[in-house]
Length: 277
Image (cartoon, rainbow, N blue to C red; front, side, top):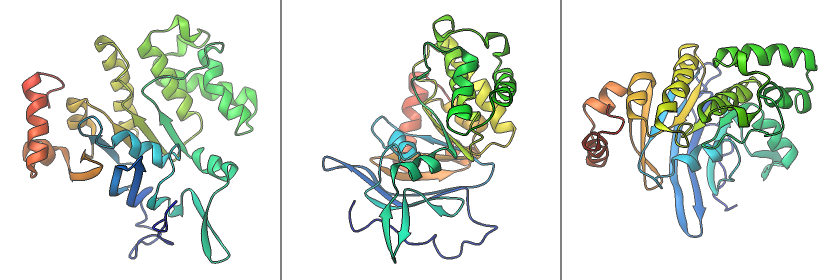
């Protein structure tokens, strides 16, 4: 950690009513001298769907990994509902949280990765119930009843007793989404959730995300799926070289991009015929 970490309080002007669910303030993350994140600031409001796009290596995945505290930040500050993430006040100074305290914060943030990371020796049902029972201390009967509802929500109620090897990639990713939802997270982070899927399986996962967005779940989605971003996002964010270059509602973001860098990025996607907005 450098001396730049952290702002000691949320930026001025934030009230109880205006504090976003997630607030990132001048986040910086460096790997071996390379700034993967270089002063990123971003707010995510209650019920908002923020879709982050950009070229490979732009810092998109690092951004959500930092929010989930899978990576520590080198400068800046992160907040969840106004509470500092990753650090605490101690005797007038800030210090990193213990792993136990960081894990407690992490439980309020759901995350779905590119790879599914399911337990291969557990059924879909047990994959979804394991964290609520083992980590959150819920009774197994309660957890299983909720897990069945969540599997139904992602269209897999009839696969509850199947093992991951018996499921397609799209079905496994939908189980992973149900598993993340089972912890009742305050916000859901998605790190390119369709990138590991065969093209014919992408739509079934995106359909689940559309449903979650329609339900008002607060979401940050990193994706290359431009059509999905235009359809579902409340706000789109374009990142390049570790910075937020442009942000705005999808109709402006895709219809009238301001920065030459975003215009070039969208032009390449359209020219390639992939995920045309």
